[in-house]
Length: 348
Length: 270
Ligand code: SF4
Image (tube, rainbow over all chains, first blue to last red; front, side):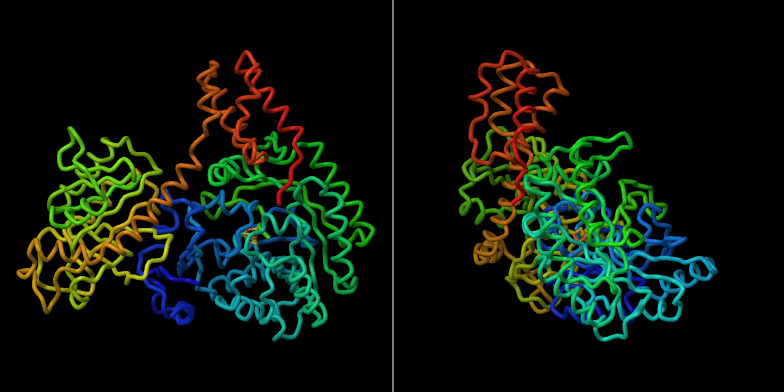
């Protein structure tokens, strides 16, 4: 699956880097100084690279944990996100990562210990206030877990700090590491969904909706708190009926007692990302949808469509979900202090 | 289009024959086959010559980011067998220490190694391949081409057991000839990537026909391009919207008509 690994000189001997390389014994390994030499180069083509992404093993030396936009909160007093990985093995056509990054290669920051330390410091700084941490902004939290061991390495931090909450956001079915552990009330596994017809058309390589539902069910039976993320809402002919059917399928499976939170958000992208995406995929029906620029520099569905779909979904969801567990989120983008290209739009 | 840059005539000869490349009139040491979209430029030895060949080719073919580039030639290595074709992961200029990382998005059944570009031939063989052009090729390509469309490919001509002194023009021709199947595979991959990018950039025949027929301002041209692309996405089987736009008198009318048509088209993602 991975033919080419780039590795920063500084992490050549890092045990996690060695373990990950051990999983791809046939891959060619190329040493570089900093991952940006490969990842941030100009004139790369994301669409072409997506055919055969390489894995870049790197170290992250600052800004391990960053404030997340308050609009994405699910009840926390202070909210942070962290990205042990950049990019994703799936290929959802609406994914903002395609518009944000120049490269489709996967970057894995192997110095988890520094991330964990930074998380602990934020938890301690929050004191009695509930601190929430989101891990699925720049990647799918679980999709590459068998390779990254993310769950096994990060969950103990939260087990030791039950006052803090971790959200794992995913479209994947890679739940083995979670099933091997005692569930934690402060770790929410949040599954993202679009209706099956839409997922099949534009969530390329991601597990189909029924498989995600099976994974959700197994985790729920095991005792893990579950989150539901209907974000982004995608419009097409018949979207209302398709979302109605999706909500029915999902709530046939979800046990109210295990449900932590439900959130909802419309499809939107910063204008510059949208421009990049339409250059990469001029032939994509999604980008021929009735989209328009908003006053705050975003591209979103035309106001009437956006409002109509949002309010329909909100009203329908409130038939299933108690209001205190429901977190509709409207489009807000904030700049990310970590990099010159980051935004606070969740991918998963 | 694909542009091959070779240092030496013996490297180029089998390719000129195989790809039926003919001398390009008015362009010295440049060969071309318009039917296949493949060109070959002979650079001569050394980084500066390779860089100059890239620049000449770029200008001659009015190249853009959809064109593909291949630096093909011989190289030395400590223990890879003579005649082995190799793809390159990292190119280092021995003089400056500058590095380039070719980005390959297709698989070929060849070993992949790092390469160092030296100023002079060197009998101290090492784990990296060495040549005398590749860094110059990459330096000249920087910012000029899409990275995934720029590849080096080297054929081992000498190693610790079979020194540079044994390399003759006849041997070089033979080594290139025996690797033609894999060279064809690599050139085929690069041509198909180039064709894909060309297709994505191409606003299509309707754009050309409409801009010939009406006066579109620069911003209207952008709008037209965007609307036609959406139209093609939503109506992939509609081969000729131009015909139906015939009776419109002005550019603005055409744009309004396309916009209105798009608004009425149901969005079906599947
Ligand atoms: S939206 Fe999420 S699952 Fe889909 S490609 Fe992006 S990161 Fe991966």
